[in-house]
Image (cartoon, rainbow, N blue to C red; front, side):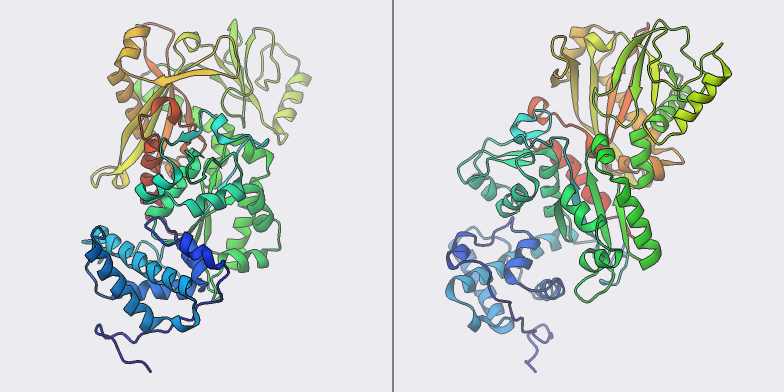
Length: 555
């Protein structure tokens, strides 16, 4: 048995698997600050258990050097890593290029651990948030499942409301940003396609989907494994196979122990419906009930369904308006007695739609596919409408027509949570961006987007100001988080939200929330409203989401 080292630990000998990369690959892809755990896992060719042991051993060894700026600093790091490799890893079986790669990998694993140790200082003795078979306080793995309505595969640079553009080249970004991992992005380019990431050559200026930028930052911040999956492939691998095979391939570790897992669904309502995403929730419940799986989806099933159906969101907003004594447009709900029968013009909306889809302005007498009950209609027609409403399909409802949308549009208020010990559940909120959007009068598919400022309110002359908007948005945000059903219906607001706010048509003017848009399905409009660097809004949501992930336990 090897002699104990200076810290009293018996050194382990790690035998790396056969290298799968070409000889010149190692020299061109040396580890750096942004290298992910997935890359280390693949290239070192260790099992996840062995890699975890390696990281724990590295953490236990004392080496307080932080800087790597001077040649002397780099030499100290290299000597430390070389000595570690000589005593812990079977280096004799490796060729020269791979040996250099492994030494630098150990350097960066240790340096990353040193940084994390500084961040963790003072909270090391806190009680673990959750425990699993993976070890005391181990955090769940995260599987980020992405879907886009851009089924044609158009490059992301054409999706103006979703793209994050970078002025620096790929090479410059990898050097400057610790979360910008070129290998990860290339893999995402292969799996997700150009609709999520494009133009990532060494000297190109990348265009990346906001969701992928957000997730790359989470991967850097979150202290556990994070993987990215396209919905179609994930559905085939997770929902399609036999349940026992799903457990073995995704929810058990290498030693066949249960592995805590959070599946994050990043998509809009239309994709959820069209792709049969509801089947995923059914599969998860069976895996939990029949196999004891430690797995959950984010958002939860109830919130996902209620957000798509819209009705519970609107009822919550109606209740807040009643509590605060503020104005809201009248909503006539499905299968109820019509409350807008005498209105000359109403706005018809369909459940399970997003953006401006399935929004129609109709005049009195044109009831379209409404299921509300009008007076003086035959009983037979009432029964037919009720039967139609009971069918498993999206329902239509209508709302009072609001004339201010045409000229003043909506104010999209982006709010994220921040840690505040004395606030509700230890989290407060802060507004990080506000966009004004006005639909084009000439192109139904276009809208004008700009950052909302004091000058915006001076121009529209509504009698309201930017501070009024901020106060209203925060009051609404806090009200929604304060509901008794927050966990089931508004859990995602523990990370943040986009409130789509409009102005009342009547005097005195006031604000009202037109829609609660969940952050994981909201366009960020980064290209139009954010100063350089454009990724800062993604960064705000990534930080808030990482904080919430770190609190989640998976029973």
